[in-house]
Structure formats: structure tokens, C-alpha cells
Image (cartoon, rainbow, N blue to C red; front, side, top):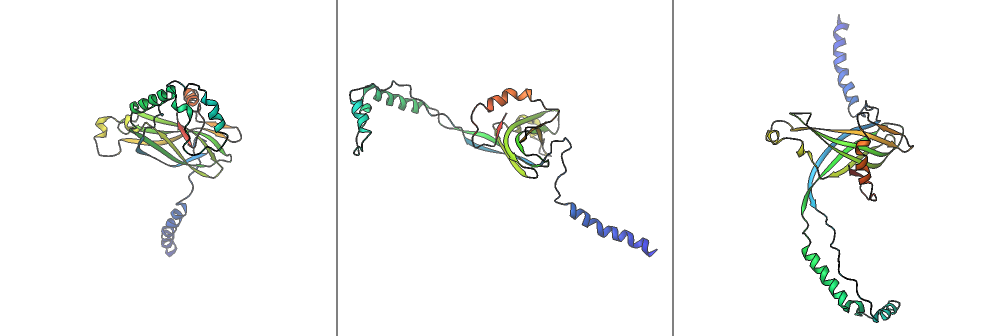
Length: 239
């Protein structure tokens, strides 16, 4: 009888140890077979200046004068301070400078625009290094889950097996287009549900994994658009 009473007490003492050992454990491999686990995600909103191209002068090119040859020879020696370029005194040069001043005065002033930053932290649970990643941030209206918005991104990354990476992408679009004004006025609960989905993974060895419900053909034109310019310091581009 005493043995039967002690057994439940031992089980109660052991249960907290089991749970403590499970805390902090790495997330399980995704069920979709992507081998890329999403550890967390969030989005933020900020206001940044809208970059505008500098005005381009359309004035005539400076006329060639007899002083051009003298000016070219002067470039090969050390000019004394204050030497003026002979081309600057021509009528065409003065007209071009005046045209540039007029264009700069007419150029619209820089204004602030809304920019949304999307972040997702992922871990490579597979045995191959990831090089290219297609993913999306989904917003679904809580009151009407069929009302959904997707922000899709293309990223150039280097994620070795077992390593983690924080993805960062910027977009002019946020979740506001998903939720109706009526539901936004309700303060009880979140107006929309958020989720990050991995759509396609291109590995360093040339192999590819792609989610069955996602179509590469649907974003082909968007991919051509975002890759038409050289890739800069950014990690991801919005599709």
C-alpha cells in the first residue's frame, strides 16, 4: 500500500523536470518539407523621405572656343589658385547654368512616405546551404479569414545547415488594406492574423524546393522587374 502511495508523488516530482528539459528546444522540422523553420516574425511602420532624382539640365552644351586648347594644356600643369575655365564664360554655358537653376527651383520638395519593414527569423534545419529564398508575410482578417493580403519577397541569402538568419524586407504596402474600417474600429482582439510562409528555396548545390500551392509562373514578371537592376546592399526585394 505504501508503494502505491509513493508512486504518484514521484510522478509529480518528475513532471517539472521533463517540461524544463523541453523548454528552449529547437523547433521541429516543418511539416511541408521545406527544411526551413520560421522562428519568429514581425512588421514595423516608419516614415522616410521619398527619394527623388536630381533634375537634369537640358540646356545646350557649351560652344567650343579658341580658348579650349589653352584650357586643355592648362590641365596638364599645376594651375595657380583662382584660374577660371574659359568654357564657363561662353553664352551657352551661362544658358545651361540658368536652365539648371530654373529646374532645381521647380523640382518638388522631398516628402515623407510610409515604409513597412517585414522581418522573419528562420533556421536551416536541412543538410544543404540555402542561397535564394522566396517567402511571404500574410495578413488575414480575423472576422473574415478569406479576406487576405500577401506581401511576397525575394531574398539572396547564405544560410548554412543548422544556422539562423533574420530576413529583412521593405514594402510600401502594409496590412491596412486587409481589414475593413468597421473591424478596425473594434478594439477587442487583433483585427487580423499574421503568418509567414516559405514558398521556394534554391540551394547552393542547384536543387530546388517549392511549396505545392505556390506558382513560380505567377511571379515571373515581378522577378524580372526586381532583378533588372544590380543588387545592392539590400537582402530582399518586394515582388
